[in-house]
Length: 112
Image (tube, rainbow, N blue to C red):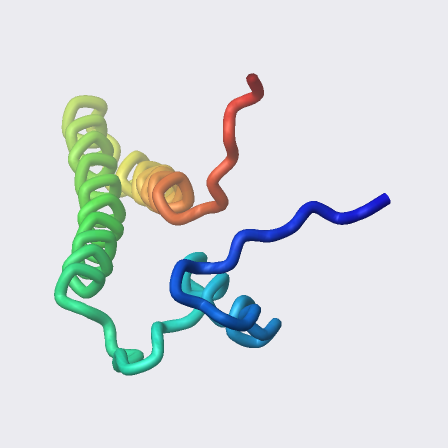
């Protein structure tokens, strides 16, 4: 059984070496930077990273702040001093970590 002929890039007189094809595949997949480009993050990549970092911080702080507010209101309403604040700080921290996990955790694709 003969293998089908592969098409070479236009203008190429000799087949590309394995190393060249591997390097091109790695560049296409984002595993390697193209030759001649620096490995530093571009402005777009940096802004995406900063956006994700800001979102993670806001998720954590807002979850704990809402939980503390609920605990404080319950403590005032029921005339208990630190009980509900302590419970809701723990619950808010857990909710914040769960939100961050949802943002940063492994991405699963829904079944088709």
